[in-house]
Length: 67
View 1 (cartoon, rainbow, N blue to C red):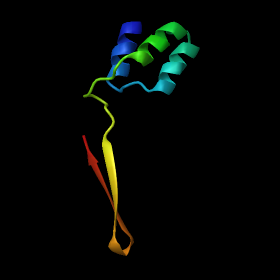
View 2: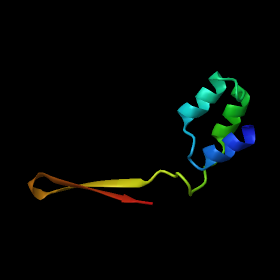
View 3: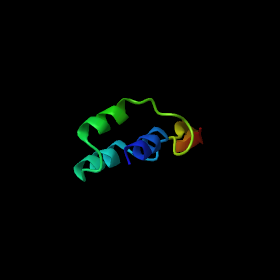
View 4: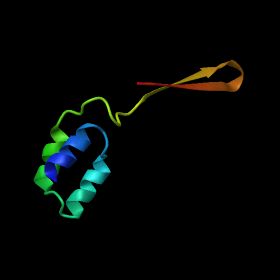
């Protein structure tokens, strides 16, 4: 299960809060969670999107999403 969680975390499918929940449920150990958090995340899958907000004249605000 550790390897599966590690892979999903790297792809942004699992958040830090969800990782902590796995520790609370004794699915993985604290040491394993710490090891996972130290890994570099990779792009793809559920990677967060970049958001840019721009305020235009007359009170109009535009938010642009990119990857």
